[in-house]
Image 1 (cartoon, rainbow, N blue to C red):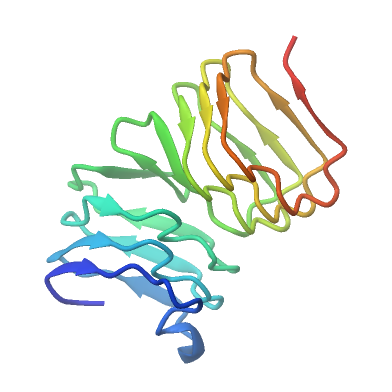
Image 2 (image 1 turned 45 degrees about the horizontal axis):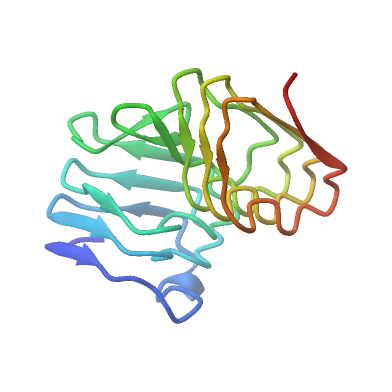
Length: 178
């Protein structure tokens, strides 16, 4: 995807590329922002590449991609970084997006927030480990994680936003850590 400026928010449901069987999304230099839900429904896209120029992502910009395997970020990007295929803010304090195909995930030490829709649609996710020091779980974080059975929420968490566990049909309970 090339151009200058922002990719607009997608408020219409499926994105404009949803029926094109796109297998990878490479955003070129010059694009500065990706709007909310911009790639919703690009179910065949396994990879996303963010250039150095993208400094803003709207809510759920990379969510709703059911086969997403990895997100890659130009190492000179001033706002974002990737680690093991997942997307973080450059300072590593916020987990922004996790690939949809994960079955287990350890949120690294140092992460203090999990962003909007970060795990949403990870239907194969069975196990997630949250670090001590995490303080915020944003909206819709684990939405539709239908294989998730248990989450231990660290005592450091002071905010869990709405609908964070909606659609987690196998979730037996969430428990605070001792």
